[in-house]
Image (cartoon, rainbow, N blue to C red; front, side):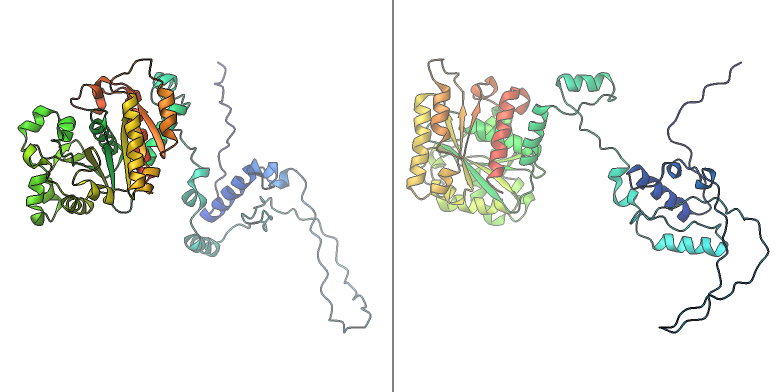
Length: 436
């Protein structure tokens, strides 16, 4: 019966060494040989040099003569004759290459007990080996797992054996997530405003707030400062859930703001849509327009002690009572616009008003968001509107038509189209870009 074939493995079993220090030295020499530091192929294969060439005969050295004074001719001392001796073969040794300069070290001799003890002490005092300080040379870097598409399907079918890595689209998504999740030093506030209602201002606040909550390690806060009975919380929770909960509003928080000295106390006046925390606007029309700039600044100061990112839904217009306080404390702005001609004109008018009333920096660094809420007809030149607004702001981002936004009801990321979620991610990343 023929013998079983032995698998051909390019890596041979390592030679056992008498001490850890010697074994480590040989392993280091082998690693440098693989990296091309000049150790011979025979040494890398574990073949002693003595097997490749006969050992050179030992030549006895002549004894040293007396010192010769400078300037005098040296006279060679007679060397006593000695009987001829047979050459003594030297023990085969494996040259060890120094890790620092690649210079062969002296051949090692069979270690004694004292030598072994000294090697152990030297190993204990030696710095950490490369496989601890630099594991990258021992562990192959793993590619990120692809999600979706052909790459994701191939990864799933092969159980991860074939991993082509993420495609360009996924890499862009991952980069957006990295920008959104950056750590911030301090507390920042973004105001979302417009001169015209019904063009996606509140839905943008909710969608971007939920996106920030999804990617950031700290929960964001959204404040409804709309003087006209704003519906920020209803769009984030759903009207039915909001009515069933205790309808605490920004007015209730202002009445008891002096007693709020912790996040637990503040949570009694907030609503939660997942990790997005919200302060509801006043629903009573008789008092909804009574929020002043000073009162808003008190709310903003309180929020800044617990949240690093805050969004403020400003309502329609830029001249109501709280607006000066909102603009004074804003770090950047989101200007809501639509593809209708009137919406584009109002967005430009908003930026012009800001620039002429002492907020030129906010206008220049504003983010204009055009929401295709009404799915305008083909008669409207969307490209022309975008080009018209893109030159007067820091960034322009378009949100495509989506029934999850256009219906004016609950906004949840799960039901939105991928293109809409991508737009909200771009807005959230642009907002955080303005903080750092």
